[in-house]
Image (cartoon, rainbow, N blue to C red):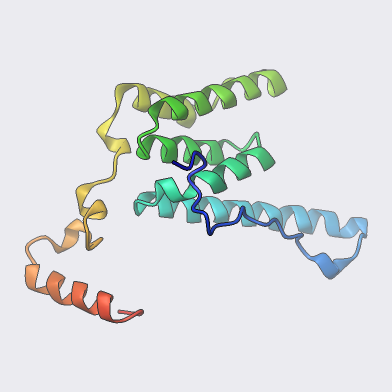
Length: 167
């Protein structure tokens, strides 16, 4: 199998320069930094959503690239560790935790944050909260708020399979 979690048709994410036509003026540096931070937060949110929707195995390669580019960003490590665990790679998830633990200690003399420590504990306990709920992982992807509405679910499933956009 593919160890990075990337499919053969996927390429690693390209990092585009923020405000490329803005020149090299020092006045632009704070704006670039702020926009880069916004981009990273949005990327984290996007990847977290994909993991929550059951695509953990598909985002591992992208997350691995991102933690290499931003090694002290704990949110990316948290997503990588969660994706590895949800993909059935508990040992790799714990190894990734150890990597960030060593990195933070070597670079900053700090322990991982509370959220990362709690994640390690959840993995060691094989906490059911880390696995996808069956309502999300099901074949239709319909949430549990539609339980008891089999007719609506059937119609919705048919519409989604027939049309690219269903509202």
